[in-house]
Length: 455
Ligand SMILES: NC(=O)C1=CN([C@@H]2O[C@H](COP(=O)(O)OP(=O)(O)OC[C@H]3O[C@@H](n4cnc5c(N)ncnc54)[C@H](O)[C@@H]3O)[C@@H](O)[C@H]2O)[C@@H](O)CC1
Ligand SMILES: Nc1ncnc2c1ncn2[C@@H]1O[C@H](COP(=O)(O)OP(=O)(O)O)[C@@H](O)[C@H]1O
Image 1 (cartoon, rainbow, N blue to C red):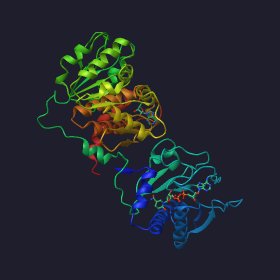
Image 2: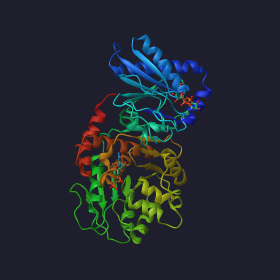
Image 3: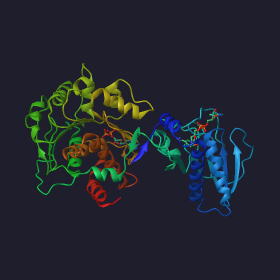
Image 4: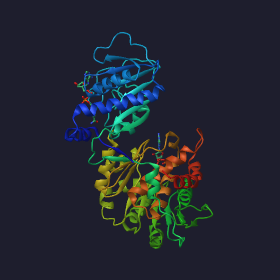
């Protein structure tokens, strides 16, 4: 997995390093020159413009300029603080104006359609949060050093950075602030089914859906089945519609259904509660009883999170005493209900603080999803894309995580692996018109491909 380190932490690593700064800059500049040559597809007859600032980011760019000249590239270097009225023509612009030391108030010049290669971060992109300034260029590629920064993966980061290249320049990273989840990690986390498998061994209990929102129960159930649950029992309180044929249809009344759910919950390996349950007072009461008394790992999603927030003692009080893992899956609005404030731009900190106050695993949804658990390095999943922003995809995610918990994957990894396969599933879907059920259909192939690749 790629390490993610905050800019402040990277500065401390830099300060503590025994490698002299000049050497780090030489290595960084050489890596930028190599990336530029790859981007140009050669050196002969190619022209590069380097916009170089007054700090170390500019120094990286000047070294790259020297290396490129040595390779026969025609290079012009312009001073970011003294830009000429007309920029020299080029096949590639290297943005070495400012990196993590940028303080705002400087405009990146208009380079038209010329591709931009950014050094460390495109100028003006906040490396801590990914929020771009008004003139931040859209780079085709960004070369960063030793570790990715949160700004590369959150907010405007992915769109402004283009392809991200992380280059080892010999700085020892003592600890990562987060890890970017990849296929190799998820493959490693997935258990093989034992030959003596038994249908109750990976059984998932789901409470989701109400009259008028029966789809939530259906989506979570089929997602859990397709993510490897050996058996799924589903209840949609007050609903008489049929469950999927392969699932156990556990009909429960619209009120006080917690007794029926808790009754034989010990037979299951996980409980998914919340998608499409509604926000009635009696629903809140039943959800809270389940959270307090459930003896199996739980995923609490959607209206289950509303129920947690809507109780006088506050969600931490309900959760901290749980002796088995709990995964909370808020989007920004649900995070706001739980904490009284929507997450700010520092999404790693937002997820981590909710995890710390509740003792739960928190999966904070978004274009890049963060998974935080007390005592674990946060995980970031950026496998999905905007096609996931459609009704019901969260219900699918909850079902997948429920199945992975039932398959005995620890909560932190189960949540991140769930978000990762959810993202891979959408990659296999059509470019337009994707609905949540399409993700479910893709899951067996996603898992099959993941397990078949030997990276
Ligand atoms: N540990 C690492 O990650 C390494 C980082 N390196 C590079 O070092 C960069 C950080 O270097 P610096 O701390 O020198 O920061 P920058 O190179 O981003 O720029 C800081 C300088 O720019 C000036 N400045 C900032 N905003 C301005 C504005 N709006 N108008 C005019 N002047 C402005 C500041 O006064 C300061 O002199 C990284 O982005 C990276 O490119 C590499 O050199 C090698 C090692
Ligand atoms: N722009 C986006 N890019 C990538 N993933 C997204 C984007 N918007 C939403 N998602 C993902 O889609 C899912 C939506 O979940 P949720 O909001 O709970 O949907 P619902 O409640 O309709 O089921 C989450 O997994 C979230 O991370």
